[in-house]
Image 1 (cartoon, rainbow, N blue to C red):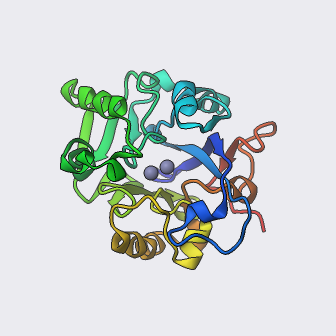
Image 2: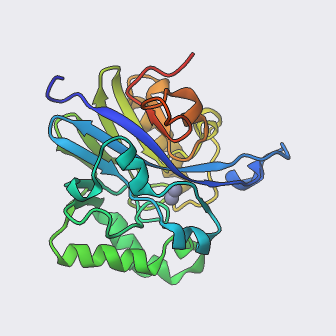
Length: 265
Ligand SMILES: [Zn+2]
Ligand SMILES: [Zn+2]
């Protein structure tokens, strides 16, 4: 393995059945179900394992009425990753489904955009409409990590290790960052919530939870420029990801897939 080429695993941990109309500003003309899946991602390279996002746990799933399918730690262990040994976690943004399980990575340093922490702890949280996807305990847990010397802040674009860079996109949350990873098939972009579903990218429509609509649609174009092709952009909540990519190994179908592998035809 060349020293900047990485493997990527998408690990599904949760699920939420919902109507298509709930996934787009302005609704959707089709009265069909369009569920969301919940993922964390493991990026494995010569400098070790980087985990993108930490998911939510059973208690939060119950509180938010989202189904926890398999705990995040179980998914990582299924591909041989010991969470206690992980040293690097990238946080795409601070919504409840991306920063839970605070104690799962006791030795990790967390990488976060400056403006996401400012957003999640500042005046915008005075407004119910803006704070809805945030959980105060999650935010406090991240503040505690800052004081413990376990957070690295980024402002815009930065390199985490050779071959892995973060890119501030904003839009869905003020400090949302996506991650670009060099792999054997080219540059794959883990959008996280810069694009929830493939349908958002292909139709230019917008998920209802949004800080800034202009940044969302500009973000779609940015993701496309960062990736080697449109097929190299991986949305953050689409069940189709599990269908399009091969299982990490036999027995993990529908749970863990390889994103550095060519998608199925
Ligand atoms: Zn989000
Ligand atoms: Zn999300």
